[in-house]
Image 1 (tube, helix red, strand yellow):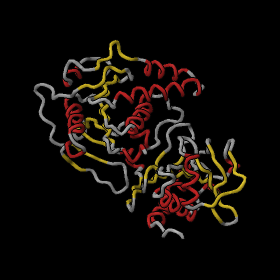
Image 2 (cartoon, helix red, strand yellow; image 1 turned 120 degrees about the vertical axis):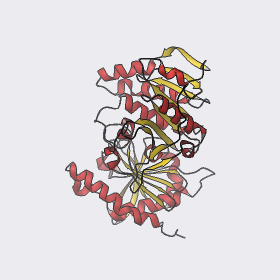
Image 3 (cartoon, one colour; image 1 turned 30 degrees about the vertical axis):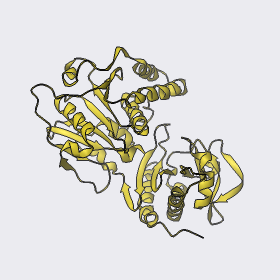
Image 4 (cartoon, one colour; image 1 turned 120 degrees about the horizontal axis):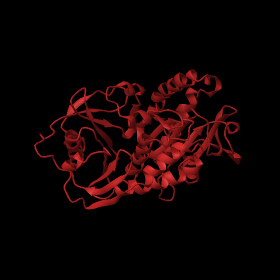
Length: 374
């Protein structure tokens, strides 16, 4: 018995193919590297139905890469190629649910087949990830070892195409530029890139949290914090900052990447504690569990601009509390009062917002970026 077709699969296929055509054309890699329209549709369709199934009570989480094994470094090959359907995907999902492992799929004799697993795939290979039941993410590899670039997010019948032109908006924060894939190649050790890693990690623990990034020079930010900070870090924890300085001088990424991942997990874990985690702009940890307060003499923040980097999304003006509650309201108030700071806010439901001060609009601006973090 086969499942009915997933309508969003056909609706999104042409738009995804157009994305690859533009990027591959710009790199002289178009040719046979362009994913076929029917292949995109078939993979999305099979993955969607697999996401709704259960195998021994577990929710399937799987990453599928459309790439032939000859283009993969050290592929693990199955003795018999598997058919691409929801039953197969559900059963094989536990083997490829860990980060960085993909089920390799390619067309043989007119039919898509799973040929094995892959760890190292080429840049601009089509990848589809099952993030949760009914939640799929289409992405491609950057080619520099960093986070994949998201192209589209499908949730039920809703399709969100990532708007690459969002990088051209005024006051676009560096974190958003990195998530959109516009940072310089090889810059994965930079401060902004580490903020991306922290954002992904703090969103993953699903407890909600806030990171306040404050200037390393000056103490004005303390006027917007209730003292004493419950878990002040004295002296500041500098391991992450020290590693960033070291990584800037070392060309071999393997020398520091594992340590960086451990430190990111360590720092992101602090955000699970109620209150805000405070980092300097050098990524030194100054404290966590901090309570935000309105600076003496400052007005209450009443409105914030909000945008989401998806096609068709329109900027809006809303009360900050409507973005997610008291956590978002306090972060917006902090940025309103301390205009040279950045606040990263994760909700328990997975929403993620970056608050900055917009000099052009002269108000707090909220960038909704959860679609880029999946």
